[in-house]
Length: 130
Ligand SMILES: [Zn+2]
Ligand SMILES: [Zn+2]
Image 1 (cartoon, rainbow, N blue to C red):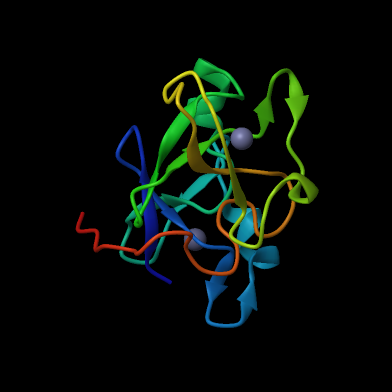
Image 2: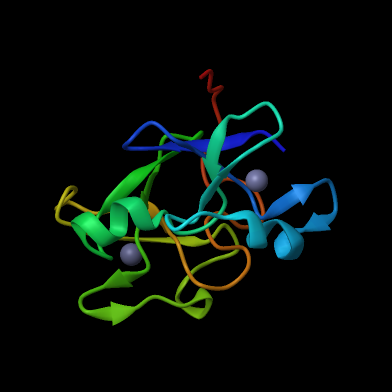
């Protein structure tokens, strides 16, 4: 499955499927200590919270952007864990953040499927080339 976005350190985000209609369960075993792994042609990518970023910079920071241009934040906010119940069908919601004090739609990574992005994009996805 192709990239759904890109993190601030340049590593692409992939969705929650290892392959069409195949859940991540088996692939998770191949994730490294930063929750990433390469595909067969060795493009390193993340399907879930990128620990390389959240361990260094915090659980509530801007992590990157999805293909529709909206930002992705970590799994915590205002010192609280974000759960899927806090988010809409696209895995995001709208409010002010430290980077966008006027408020913006944004995605969150969570510890549960679908981890980064839900049922489609909130905005119109563009294209992404590595
Ligand atoms: Zn993968
Ligand atoms: Zn939020």
